[in-house]
Image (cartoon, helix red, strand yellow):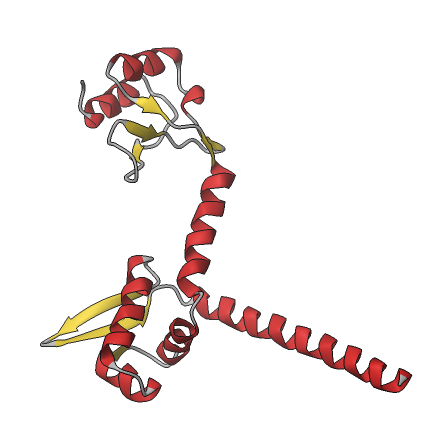
Length: 173
């Protein structure tokens, strides 16, 4: 079976409008995903590239780009789905902190903070910087704070709606 980078050379040689083949690491290395501008699908390749891949034992995966984006969003929001992680991100809004500083502000054990930081780090939400024996954490993309602000606005809007419903119920009674 050909190495994946050999297949990449075939694609480059044929001027196929595909990006670098990506691997679905949850499956075997034989599962390849080809990215085009609109879809992640093997069928958009020229037939000769398809045949080269088939002859070399690569099994294409048909995934619309929208489904890939949905999967990314799902995993991203799962990473945010814990109150302590949200609190850590709110603290990191002020600037980078190490585990000890976060532990002091949150008033929880260091292992709990480390566990939550591990989840955020695995989803590339926070970056790390090592200085001596300390590891400092910061938010990778400041746009995340806009998302947290939007969530707060949505929450406030729901609260306003709930209050108005309660006021209407009180007036009717």
